[in-house]
Image (cartoon, rainbow, N blue to C red; front, side, top):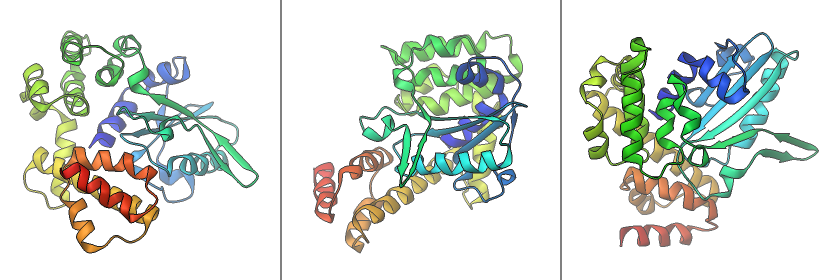
Length: 286
C-alpha cells in the first residue's frame, strides 16, 4: 500500500522529486524495471526515473531491510549496463522512524567491492523542505515536526488551496494513507474528509489491487493484504536469521498485529537464536 502511494507520487510529480533529490528542475520519465535486462528483485518497491543525462533510482522503505545494500548494487550494475553514459543517483528513503543501524547504512561491502548510495531519513528532514512542492506534500507529515496533528491540518489546507486542483483528491488520499504511519486513524479521519478516497484514483488503485487478489472489501481488505505482506516478510527474515520456525512459534507470529510485526521486524536484526524470538513474543504479549 505505501509502495503504491510513493510510486504514484514519484512518477506523477517527477519534477518535484528531481528538484528535491537532484537539486535541479529537470524532466524525468518513468523507466520500467523490465528495461534493465533482468527481472526485478522487488518491482513494487522500485522506482526508476530518467532524463537524457541522469537515471534516478528511489527505494521507499517503511522499516530496515538487510537486503537493501545488495539491491542497490545490483540495480546500479543493471542501470549502468543499460545506460553507461548516464549519471546514476540512488536514494533510499526511510518513511518510519527507527533506531536501527541499518537506516544509517549507505554502502554495500563485499570481497573487493564497495558500493555507496544515499539515504534519507524523513523524520530528520525539516517540514519546510516539502511544503513548496505539491508532489512532496504527502511526505511532509513524516518529516521533523513537533505537533503532527497541527502539521496535518496545515498540509491538508495547503493541498485544498493549491492551484493544482486536478490532483487535489490524489494528494489528499496519499496524505491520508501515509499519515497512518505516524498518527492514529481517528486523528487522520478528523482532519481529512473520508469522501476524498472515493474520488481518488490512488484509492481506486489500492482497492483494485485488493480485488485482484480475491479480496472483497476494498480499502479495508487492502489493509489486510498489507498485514499479510508484512507478516510474510518478517517470517522470511526470521527464517534467514535464526532458521526454520517451529509451528507453534510461527502461529504466535501470525497472530501479531501490524504494529507488533513492525516492532518484531526491527528487533529481529539483533536476534541470534530462537530463544531471542521466544523472549520477544513473551514480552510483547505480557
